[in-house]
Length: 225
Image 1 (cartoon, helix red, strand yellow):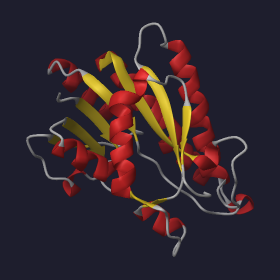
Image 2: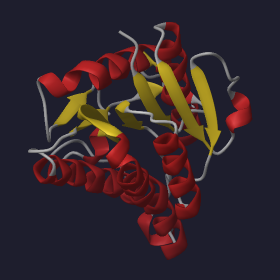
Image 3: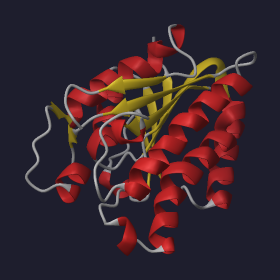
Image 4: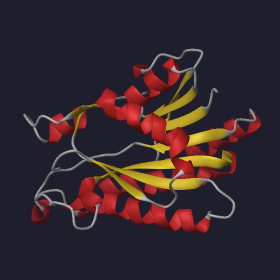
């Protein structure tokens, strides 16, 4: 059965692969990114150029969906930004910029779209193993990994807050995946999974995971990181 999915960070990596796979399966996908021109609009793919830090733009997008009577089955908060830099050299502005996208932008788009998400729908936050307590940590990732830790706790809190009314909230804490972001951050590192392989898992989880999980941070990693 065709579903309606909203994916942030849809211009590259896992997000783009997820959009393409979902469309191939016949789902309607709203593909959000700061550069919508990378994706071609089709019967199933609806590119939306948007900055998650722009509250007015997010409100306008949510209003458009409301007017069109769109009911969202899954929101995949995949958008994220990365910084590999020693903590002592990281400025307040750089630290805030990571949180602006990874935490505040994620919270804002979720808040704006809540009324459009089906009560039995699913909000899936894409996080990192680096944000999981007790997992291996790496120098230079203080801003990034701590922001993902915030996402993990936020997921647990939202699941509790909406457990009676829905939707469900879960996080996928990913290990290394071969994406542009990984290549830029760690040149030469070879990940065990491709963006397409991980996107297939995320798609299936976003449409069925709420039957089995709510408020969970699910590690998805076959390596360290």
